[in-house]
Image 1 (cartoon, rainbow, N blue to C red):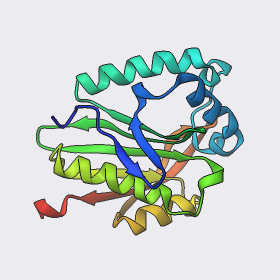
Image 2: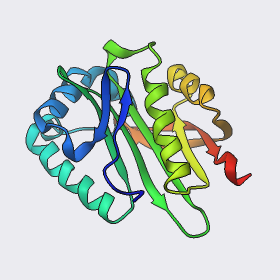
Image 3: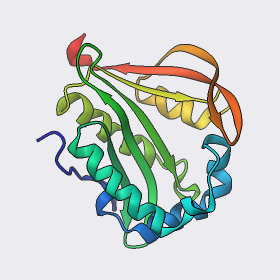
Image 4: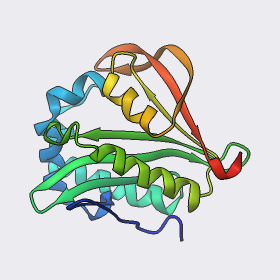
Length: 184
């Protein structure tokens, strides 16, 4: 089934469903990358960086998968968690779309790992969930994210002023989308 727990091999690491990842390792990943992720994230309380938070988040992730509204993965190896990828706001009906989200550990940047992770997740969205569109937005100055999306074939569709509140500030976003090529 499309919403079953799906895993992807990414080199020597594995992209696994969030609910299978260790809550302590997820918390350590976010704590380790806290300064890097802060400009692109909502304001976080200290609770966000605890295993207890991630135990609850894993339970929410399980419910979202069961309800077919979101899928979340963590990139792991024997050393811990190194990335998080999600398909949120999965919507069927006339739109058949999802929003793509992702964060990567600083130690793995510029190795093509996030491109591989996202490629697998997008293929799953198109080939197994039969989605028509995947959207992925970024703040204008996030050139790394823009480059990853361009490599994957995303097209810029617009620019939204004051779109999301990140780190306590309303931020503009570049709006991007990728259309399922089998449905063109």
